[in-house]
Image (cartoon, rainbow, N blue to C red):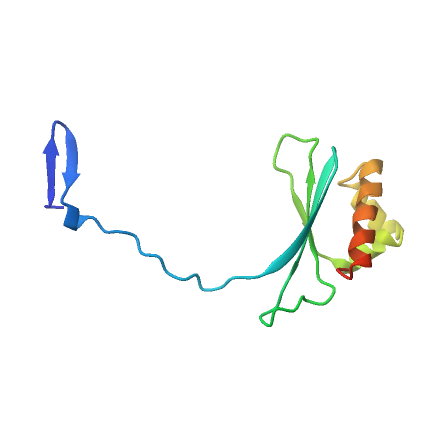
Length: 123
């Protein structure tokens, strides 16, 4: 670059050679609604997305689950509404899968979260 000068070991650029970043509109944005349920052990962040018309997708929900007992980022995302309902209805296979991430207290908390989401029509 030829519009530079070095003074005492520091390089300087002419003002008109500096390119200011431009702000452009992002291509797409997605609107959502969220609920957070938190205890000493776990955090459940539930979200549901809106379509282009502003309506919520029917029976679609994503839960970001975080085990707060661990010092590492160990978040999981659960988005299978059928599985969520199976946990809520005490399906043995779904409960076994949930127990891979949760202790017995966590399973109680998860069912409470799922129950509220079901009551609100999210799942």
